[in-house]
Length: 105
Image 1 (cartoon, rainbow, N blue to C red):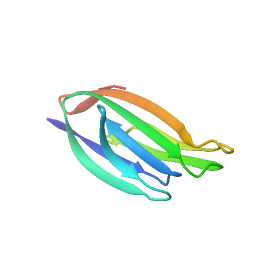
Image 2: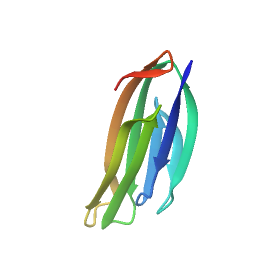
Image 3: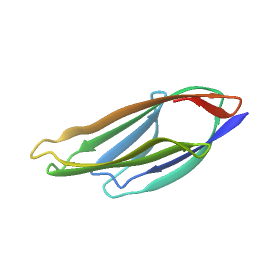
């Protein structure tokens, strides 16, 4: 059995990277929004959102991550980084799917 994963990422400033078990599954650029679905077989999963601010000043991180309609992550963060460029948002979420159902998160 499998669970349904739905991801909506963006807009993020400037570059956003979503990893699943350490592998990059989607990347967005400045102001870009992406949405995708995929079936997730039974198992344990680790999601990680990393946002880098390359232009300094203001940054934004936006992600909605749902499995079988249950929200695992709902991120809508903004901030100001001054003249700092680099990682401005870095967060992880873990979950487990058994018999096609989200059992731990």
